[in-house]
Image (cartoon, rainbow, N blue to C red; front, top):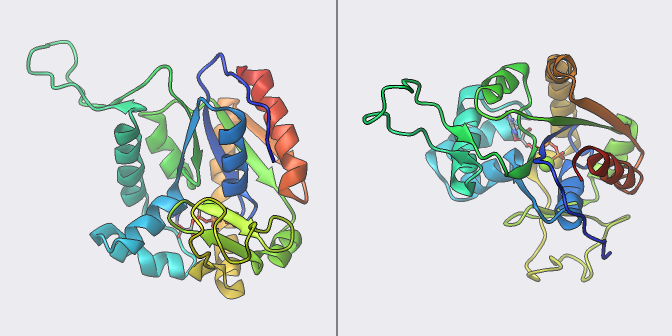
Length: 245
Ligand code: ATP
Ligand code: MG
């Protein structure tokens, strides 16, 4: 589906919060098409890339993800902040040898970069750590009843290298079993089995309350409900335009 694109006038630093399978990846892709200035980092995609490449971090994370639990906060912060730096959205700490004014070696945010973080932060502790380096100005809570999500999780297929997500019921690939862009095979996520999904949901329900409270207190939390991604996208587009375009 071709969407008209829109320019943003203000820097948007957006996070998406929602139950596993709510469609964070789907909304992210649509937002990138709609607002070409946006970039995105998906914590789940980054972790899966590390698992695929057998990095030490990936090897450590694999069994945690497979059980539906959360990777430790410190590991996640390190992973996300180095990705933010490599994208140029965070500027690495200045070496302070020549300046006496700035003893703290903190990275600083690019004032113009607009981006979405999909899946990070996921705990209040992660949110507090992120506050130190990135001032998030829009936290989106995506709400879909778990009974609806569970009914569609079994038909979710992904192109792992890119993170593109399909659903054989309502968003099928052009060629069955193949990624639209590369033609490479689609797979199902190891953690999309029903039992693991239930554990991920439980994990989400435990960690999300303090996370949502964190952003509510900052005044940047916004909720959007829908039974499908198609119901949610237009509302989300409109709200981003209202705030940033
Ligand atoms: P979906 O992608 O369907 O919206 P999800 O949010 O459960 O659902 P991902 O974001 O892809 O899935 O995350 C998959 C797994 O990666 C999580 O279950 C968790 O183990 C790990 N993970 C991802 N992001 C984080 C994070 N910020 N903190 C801790 N663990 C994380
Ligand atoms: Mg995801």
